Image 1 (cartoon, helix red, strand yellow):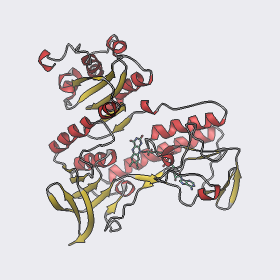
Image 2 (cartoon, helix red, strand yellow):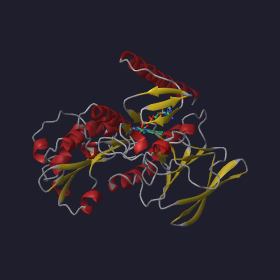
Image 3 (cartoon, protein in one colour):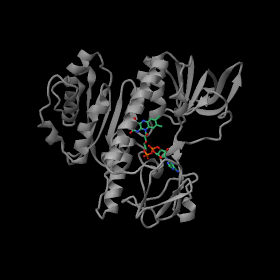
Image 4 (cartoon, rainbow, N blue to C red):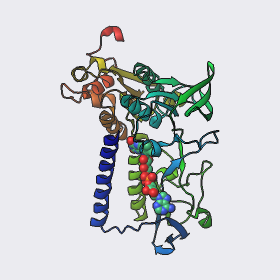
Length: 384
Ligand SMILES: Cc1cc2nc3c(=O)[nH]c(=O)nc-3n(C[C@H](O)[C@H](O)[C@H](O)COP(=O)(O)OP(=O)(O)OC[C@H]3O[C@@H](n4cnc5c(N)ncnc54)[C@H](O)[C@@H]3O)c2cc1C
């Protein structure tokens, strides 16, 4: 574990050094310190005022801290704490079966921890297409990761040198012992100490900074992007919002299409998704068709020995591809094809006539699209 930590810290520090060099080379001055707002053109950093024509607030998020008994006990950590761990815990309990909770579940299970996940909602990964959470649950079970859904964690106490978590589940009350408990139950906007109230900057009901589609707050010249405004809370979304906000400050009209922003989970196997989920399409009362292809029928997945999972494609009645949801090998790389389809409003026929190289995992994407019109020749006719 010490070597894992060392490698992680080296990678992070290389990345930080690289970004510092880029900032410097691009004429960006970096001032170290805690910034708060003085007025709409001035930030204060350690008492020193710094002026700007515009301000861009990008202070990110912090873990939400629920009013849960025992959250302050030693050994109850957030992702920050778990990423600094120099020992593999024998037993790890995770509160939250979303992307972050399941990523850590898979990682620490691979390191040798006995992992148990508690999720409040009836299904895992509840922000994604339902099928992904359902399939993931099967794959987690195969890896001996215990999962409880519809489970409300009621409290944590310390017992004989171990932590003991109590949850109410469908099968009644349950107690689980753990050496470490990870809280992965959501994040909130990081706005503390910034003096937002002094400028009258509006927040939404969950405490995120309110912005318009150009990332402008209700105060002229003050913009905000990234986790502090809520939304997808992903690194690539924050980055693109930053670019768009600055372009808008410069008088351009940049609006981001959130439908085409992908989301990935670096679980085993990986998960990646873009566009509408099936439940969202149903809720809008739209007519739609579904295409699916299993990695077990893909030659490259077979040679890799990673045949678990599938590609699912959703298209509307005009043939337009509305969403793609992948669980399986290299899902996070494969999803870019779906992103291009959704972003550019491609149709099933556009993709059907696009030749994919053999043998590659991308053939599974092509076959899933072909299956929308029962044209996948690598699926048995009985499958239809
Ligand atoms: C464990 C974990 C795993 C993740 N994995 C992924 C992933 O795989 N892919 C993905 O897309 N996203 C991932 N995310 C989400 C991603 O990290 C965030 O969406 C992204 O970092 C948000 O960018 P941001 O610029 O809004 O905020 P941040 O990256 O959090 O940056 C905010 C910065 O502002 C600084 N700051 C805050 N307040 C002040 C102040 N008053 N004065 C001066 N500086 C201040 C903070 O120190 C910080 O450096 C992950 C998040 C976590 C916690």
